[in-house]
Image (tube, rainbow over all chains, first blue to last red):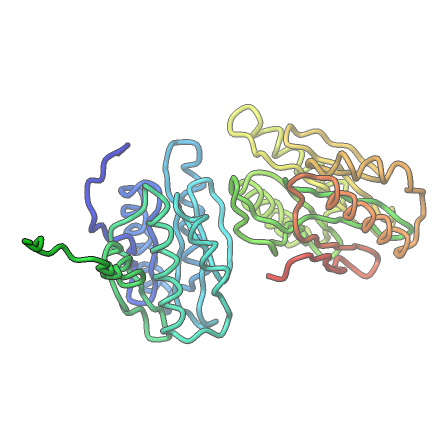
Length: 196
Length: 198
């Protein structure tokens, strides 16, 4: 709310269901509510159709809901990440009604900073650990430069059996692990003056 | 800014659009396909606000399909254009769709046609059309070099000239473009013109 940090431990990755995640940017309440609502709709789909909903379908459900509230002041910038029959899926959905399918996205006020780090280190065939470290680094660099970003860098992995949380590091601690403070070289120590 | 342009040739119509998905200063994607294949012989290149573009074009696509299912024959290009204009006009004074559309189609009896439909529900049947900041460059290029009954190769060359002009003169030029064509054999993707791989 303006120039005030109310919490450094907000969970910005929302667990929609065991194989789908949503990210939070924009209005926290809007993101939390509509992701929860999406989770409900996904579960209803499963019950009605006896199969899991695809990431394409889930993101479209959310995009259509947000589109219908267009112009009414919702603030949601989110990515829907999940695994379905077609493999991994990543969609960017926002409160303007936009929906984009892609292989990498960055959302929020710190997103340009994160894009820089993400784009320079990205290859399609990164290992899970390499990808997690790239993601962590991108978030860290964004929090370093953007005053409205910070707190905890959470990294999740989404695989064929669902998501797992890989890490949740305080970005202050990440800073010192990436850039440790060198102990100052003491050039001259003060000693007692020699009494002649 | 988003560019869409198109032209009619001998037995075909061409639509070219940039493929960038942009949010203020950020390019989220540079391979977003903005030319929707409405049905077997219609192409619709759309530019405009993010949500409106996808939602309106899909709405039109589904209604065009519905007409075909209900009546057993597809809509003509002219009918589809007028349907779109009607929807834009109805929404205009309540909840306007901020989408500009270039509709290209091929009908067996009337041949290729191109329609210019802008966000305030203007409708014109034209030989060449363009939207966006790129239109400042593309329209004069087309006015100078276009002639009726161009071959596919001549039209592609003209489209390339327009793309090159946009790339060199527009301050925030889009990186990649897609070219789609519709003729008696149907609507299909022709080629891409890329400067970045995504």
